Image 1 (spheres, rainbow, N blue to C red):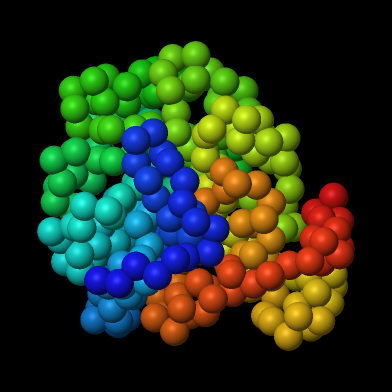
Image 2: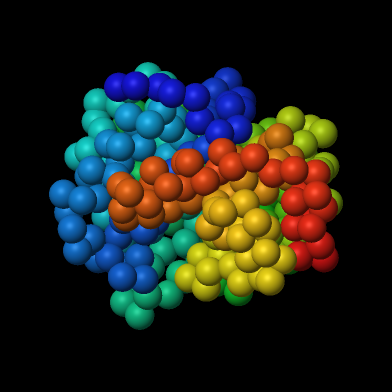
Length: 288
């Protein structure tokens, strides 16, 4: 295993040091995150290449597939390097239509944590995010019962650290009044800036912010300003978008996903793109 420096350096999640450039495993499952990958060996190759590149933060969920990505991670990387930290999430299942119905009652959460442990081949999960809201985004409402269930599992030694996903600022505050969290994972990218204030507040607290769909997800980012900066720098718009996120705040951790080794390498190289003050000022207007 080699460990060249990755764009952005490192961040500490509780007592876990991770590269700010990580990898999101969702796209390793089949179409629309259901079923096995079309190229099983290719999926294993992507995971192994991530470790070779020095990535120490892999994001996953047992809902992906379901169970597919976690089993691929175990097949590709177990026994895991000491430096590698796998982050998972619980709180939603998959149905036969590809939906994401909530599963945040205590019994479902306990079952999901044990399924993650089994499918990843672990005795303890480094970090578990409680997924809130729905497919439309964060939804207001109390989270104490669900979060306290995970806190109890943490106290039993099955989880090291806790976080939230798809959460409102009020839900972040509610969780923090119960137990410490080390990250918030929400939809955020150059064109979707609704969490700007939350990112800045978390940075002051030393809490990571992990944007999912950093490149727009199933609908790639479209912006004339983004395209203009990319053209000027002779780079791809996606490279510019990743580089901007790393510059946006030091507590932002990237987890772009791909099922291609070549694309993974392109993402790493793109995130290291140098952006000038003028570039940043132009890009900063996109999502305002």
